[in-house]
Image 1 (cartoon, one colour):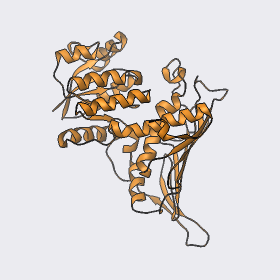
Image 2 (cartoon, rainbow, N blue to C red):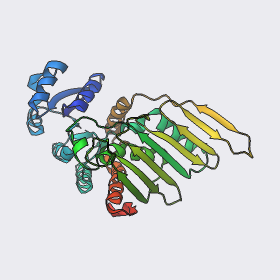
Image 3 (tube, rainbow, N blue to C red):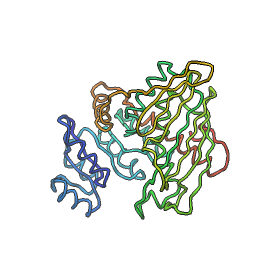
Image 4 (cartoon, helix red, strand yellow):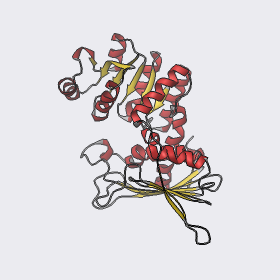
Length: 335
């Protein structure tokens, strides 16, 4: 039985509370939440025992024995939670993004490695059936070597007035695009070397920071990946994954929120267009916990380890730097 300290009882923290309670191999032994309003809601509406609720991680660590911290605090606090957990000998399962600062993220990763603790980031999008299926098909050579990947993403993102998603700059890329960039790394199985990005806002938008963009990633082997998005879309919407098209010499793999298809429609060859049945996969958050616990048992790095996730985070900060400076940015510049 894995003993968990759940840090953060906001909306996402309450989601993880429900996920952990579904399992028979994990129990929450302490809850950390500094907000009195969130504490009261957790007690009254979610049955959190008052005697196990603490205002700080320090207080929780003094009173309970645990195996890991499930960190669902704001990104700016992640490094504080992780470093205290590592110092106490605990593993960390942490909500994305790893940090809102790349240098801080690198330091936290080094601390986890120094203490020999497992540190995993909850990049749940890559655990979905469409990314899992596409990665397998590409590995099997379904379309040959991919040359182009295009993602379109239109959604009314983060529309709660006053939240940090709305008030801080570049949050659409900083917080949301780490999901899509991580999926790009997972699905394509390769790393970009540079990025060119432009960002803008629309007159009807509700974000202080730019919430629309066109981003191009360049890969060493000539592969190009594009990401075009509008986070204040009020018309038709894509799914949360976005709409994908991956093109290769043997055809394309396409998916939207409804289905996946394989097509090879060049006029000089026999046309093929067929629906792809996606793999059956467990719910993403169940899969994340399964992977985290298995990595602890087997004493190996988990998928989405913090060290690996630095590469997804580097794509985020390189894209932001490109938008800010109006030029192509090498991923090496980020570190």
